[in-house]
Image (tube, rainbow, N blue to C red; front, side):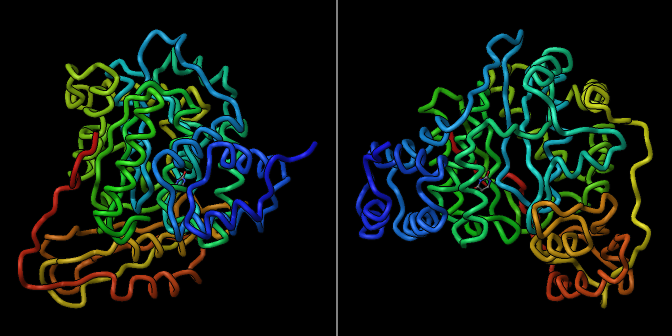
Length: 427
Ligand code: URA
């Protein structure tokens, strides 16, 4: 087959700050998926895009080309509307776990295709795999049946969905080209649009533990994704939320499952409850059920019932004891005072080094590893009181985890202002 374009000319066009035409974009994405454009060419193009950007029509076309590389799912046969949530990733971000059953308990189906953690951010599938028996891989038919019966599914995205993104994401991960707004926006939205959800709520994280470190960058990413979703017929809104400090009091797989169950039982840390309810309200409104109050379903146990059904439908035992790490190490406050800063990246890195995350895609994670926080910014801490407890099966990991935490928190005498977890809304 003769190819209509050649990769070096397309790379040079973007290098020289030109727009790419629809036909060039369609070809380069398809040719990369077929292996005609080779990884070194695509990594040069990704770097040119990172440095010189793409305009909105280019991003929309790139997204459409990635969707066209694979299958599209269709939930129109379901008896209820669908809404999904996507977080750009953070530390202690277990919100999907209480959120999916909560929204399902309010009458909206949640098809949540999730990933595994890489680097300092955790992955939803790794967290749920801490539950004995739970399995992440479902066929499209099993997923549809569970959505109809239970109303919520959290499972691994099949290989048929946006395969161009799968290949490109792995390449970006090793070529310093993850942090490009056009590439992040098209990567996330190609998967969500191909998944076929009717409504989508984006949780765009801002702060040290997030891809986007400042509010302006996060706003640009959120606006780009909301425009892509809306133009594709998906009712899309975004919340910009704080990731300067971890969410809740735990970072690590089984530890975060336990905290999520506390939230479903009507307790749990206030920031996790607040964000779960804020996202649930947005999902319900975007799916046309804005009249339903999710706080009631959390308080009266319906969300917990939906959680139990969701876990057991995927082979999990919701009553089984969660795995616990064999060793712990307590970090105490060196002096008394108010905790004025607890850095999300430092805690995320420590949890990762303790064994909660992986540094190669095929590595196993430790279910029990992670960090338990005993105070949040704004809390008073006495000298010598526990600040953090580190958990791992492999105590030789403590030293590097402690290094990650050096400079990761401040104790002071002024009361720290507590920031709301939701910073802004786009849509
Ligand atoms: N998550 C994705 O799915 N893609 C990105 O590019 C970044 C975060």
